[in-house]
Image (cartoon, rainbow over all chains, first blue to last red; front, side, top):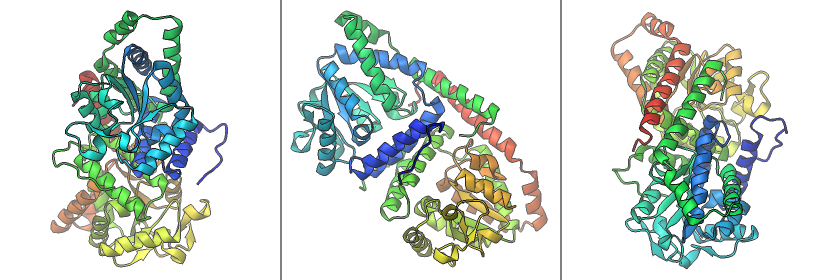
Length: 260
Length: 260
């Protein structure tokens, strides 16, 4: 159902993003559950005001530092991410020397190949986690959901996940990984478990992360500088701030009588 | 893509509901927009705590009384409702002598027939609003969205809608109908316009409505008793209470930072 969205529409970017997602669904990148997840994200994005909030900026600062200071970082890519922001994911991986790995909740080889194709078209080098390459398992997680690449997530120190399932996040943390989560829902188990939870829309986070990484590189931050930034970060406080911010906004909306 | 959800999973009901919705999508009951809308509902369900709140219970009390005291009540059924709770919708219609009418945002005969089939399988008698039967129009609403059955919504006094579009709710009210809305988003135009807005998940509302209707019937409430309940109900107060409840919940969660 393609349709014209006027330049002046107040929620133009959100509607264009939805169209990209539906195109990704039609191109077999995304499972039906990915559409529902996107709807959940839309509602939370509306609640935070469809902008990168102050707490999210602090999480992005810490995430950039953690990615740059880590030996083995992996960016986990699912269908929604590939449909929404493939170019930025590839740039971020290159700048931080992170690996790219396809990791899906509903795994199927056609979907893996479709996502790989999109990433390659966006300039990706190696793409891990495709087909038999996803030959290792996350312990105690049932087989399809638990499949990971032994060269990638299996041996990673840090995994960046976007729109991730709570169970898998928990299991990654039980494996000793540090998890950076991009999740618009500050109540999700993923946001609650992760060491760094960026409560923001992935289409805004990726360029902001790239910009932050570039600024750290330009300032020639040392390993010690980066570790200091990570150490100073408190995810619990930041999540609390994100929730307070939603609460303030709901109160305002209720007082104004503005409709969602 | 069926998968086992462990009995112990903290969000088991939400995940089972999602699976039902996806099955409905695969069975052509639901448009892609319906999947995204479900996700938005899931987000608001988190905010209210995935339970029927006190204000929602008051709305359910009033809705049951209004349905029982009305001559011409219609339960409007869309794809999401048919996928999620077909049996309860049929029982509620029978208990309250309400008609069932299929009313869709993205109308198509195959979808209407698929929904009709699900309702019939759930025990429905007559199902209105299918094909040429939807031969009347809601005034000033563009044709596909405005199609209604002249025997049903067109002449109804009360229409129960679930997950309804704001424009259409507004137009129903302009036609002089009383609208009972089931909508998890208390800020939605539907929730704001309706005379009775049940801010709760349709899968919890339907059994609760049935139970309330049965208790009124068992107590042999008179027309006067029922009208008194409806008259005492104030939707503006109840919506305010729903929003306050979300505020309180978010304040608590923000203080805790982590709620798992």
